[in-house]
Image (tube, rainbow, N blue to C red):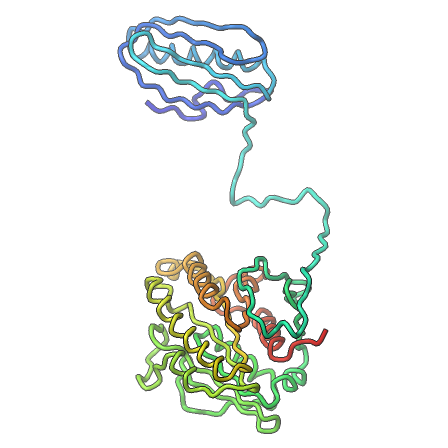
Length: 379
């Protein structure tokens, strides 16, 4: 027999509210005894009830609970006590009432701060430019915060490239390779649109698939994008263009003027994580080999990001699974000389709605973080 919270007499006290737990197994019984075990009054309450049938048994149970209520009204809210309901022949007891204040909690209701209306964020000790050659810790959380729509990491300085000339100056003489899905294709589209002399060369590639290439002959800049190998959820792709990132890395000479950015996560969300781990192991091996033959090559990992989960997408995807993939990615590439652009926290911390393809203001901050590794600030 089940009792709801609203049916228990222990609730509804004016001075305080009490959390009561009731679980009674009734066998053949004839009487009921209620004892107060601990309390500040020191008195003992006892009640006997005739239990001839189910209705009488229920009446006796509620009579016991009435005693519970009368006793609790005499003690302070900090006191604790125990009521034992004992049946003569059969059974164990069971009414435990502890003095607790009950607070109505709705997890969807925002909890407003009652403290000061301003917060001063003191970043951790920033690293200087010489530390850029060392491996990073991708598990730092939170990794940064927004101030006036500008991302500020907690572990190092970044430069905000608000002028196209600054971006051109930073990328001058560089060959930039972008490998991954449509979230890093946004970097290609942003740079091509913002840098005036960077012109896309028409390769006749499908719009969403690529490969794409932009060239700035005046400043000797080459920007390339190629999607990762299957699994992919793009439109139709020519089999000749299905190239794995690890194989592409093996064909890059590398060097001081070579910049590589990689992201791979979204299209693996409907596959077992073992498939994803196997793919990252191959990419990690190729990165290590590339750094062995060209240690000055700059390699940057773009993490996953949160996304909008509409009625259709929610059937086969979730931020929780993306978070698991992102955690695997961070662990897989930790301990080697690569850098991270934390797109997850950049999209999570911003006030704009979640989107698989973040809005331009967020992409701009990702590019700022990316270019700050290419052209680190001298401190």
